[in-house]
Length: 381
Ligand SMILES: NC(=O)c1ccc[n+]([C@@H]2O[C@H](COP(=O)([O-])OP(=O)(O)OC[C@H]3O[C@@H](n4cnc5c(N)ncnc54)[C@H](O)[C@@H]3O)[C@@H](O)[C@H]2O)c1
Image (tube, rainbow, N blue to C red; front, side, top):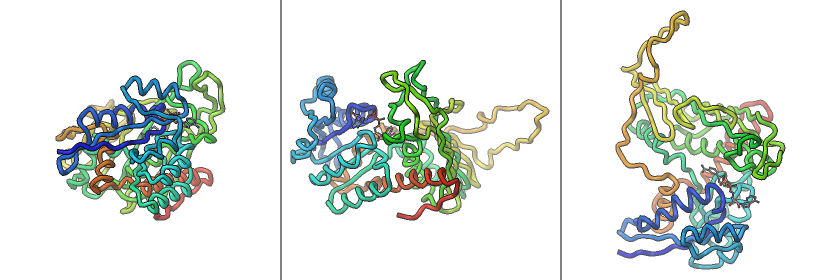
């Protein structure tokens, strides 16, 4: 059994996603488990070089995790032939130029979503990766959530009959930052810095809908800024110029209607921070991050509308939990392993930059729909 090592340039590891999900929970966790297992029994260890703008922060992370390689010089990291993959979890607005430099250096590229702020750039990156003959990937972590994996299992098993509709509810209250610190970085609330919930979440909804239910054929959305003033990481008041809630209707191939609310200005009265209810002719399901419950047509009670009487039973108790039936690993880590196998042994990996571009397209058209107050058809890319 052979063990090989792949150098990985990791840009943006001082950030929330780059540090926790990608460095700690994925790359370091993969090494701790002995590497990515390959089909021939071999193993692949990942050797990260941490890249960022702040030497002290990089040195601190490296020291904390016993890592020796870090630099503020992206081009130097890219020039090293031992580094085979470029990974980008920088703020969205910094993504495109950095990925282009990695492509010019002949690296395989794996990036956070959205792949760009504009469709034109997202498509250009996909095209450039193809021309360079390298492998590309975009993070599509929601597909690996236990709740959505169970939902996919139900779909594949024919549980729903004909799927009619999907209702998604995503969101929670993000504090304004004055009397309690905000739990998300302030750039998310400034359009000029690549923020906005449409650009943040529609790329997720794009691949979720496409993978589970069907391609999005039309979008009607209303994006709003409910909270116009917020306070940043330094306690400075700033104008929130980006949308913090979006109310979307998505028409999917096969006639399925999906409605998804996305909001950072909503208080949670749900079982999980995201939930999707799927209604089909044969049964319905509600899937969250981890859980998924179902109600089959034969088990559907007959509620009778009568506001004069209190509800006689708990509707929530009339659903059955879908069993796990398999272990669920961290979704970010699973996708890293898939990407490494995609590079080394041509394993399938549908989450490429072209798929990422469709996510940016949905965000762009969602914002257009909102600005112009109309339904927009989504051209097939
Ligand atoms: N897959 C997911 O579920 C998910 C969730 C949240 C964020 N994201 C994406 O991950 C990326 C990073 O988001 P985050 O929440 O970790 O952000 P963050 O602000 O915590 O981290 C941003 C990183 O980018 C670096 N950076 C580079 N250039 C910068 C600049 N000009 N200004 C500010 N920072 C700069 C920062 O140093 C930091 O390392 C975004 O593209 C975001 O859309 C994905």
